[in-house]
Length: 238
Image (cartoon, rainbow, N blue to C red; front, top):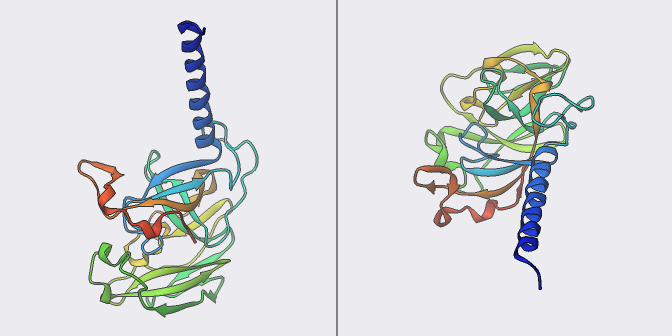
């Protein structure tokens, strides 16, 4: 017969082990985030729940921004999560466009150039309604494009008319990155707040594990089961 005291001790021990394992997993390997805005449409939609791999660029001292080893730079085209340069306790997600030493230009025609080379893109039709309903304007007022940046082939949005925030041949500093949203004309990114120091990187966005068009009332991070986007479940982020 097992005493209640022994059973309680075992339960407490298992709870501490489970909690410790969860914290270690979250600190060292993966961390979940929820997408709050449309700056990365069509790659990421509002209320996408994503997993970010924290080990991709190196390992940090727990609960600090100190790297335990020299961090690895992301590649052009990687989608990354990072601490905002404007608000330290706020996290953002964007795509890496420029690496240290790169010359970045984004023109009034919506052309992206890296080191004076035009980044390839071609216009495509919407394959589904995903993303269309979350635009701040009629979908017909946007161009949907396939873009090839580094090893990544992904989609971006450009408005057909209206003002466009541009970049005129900025050369990225050492240990810094130039970032942009895929919703190019609706993204507050390096064109506004400048380069990102690599020390502010958190990790690379890898998967959408859950997505919904609506959340539970008054709980903006909890998906309403009636409005889950099943086709985005376990969707890899390119």
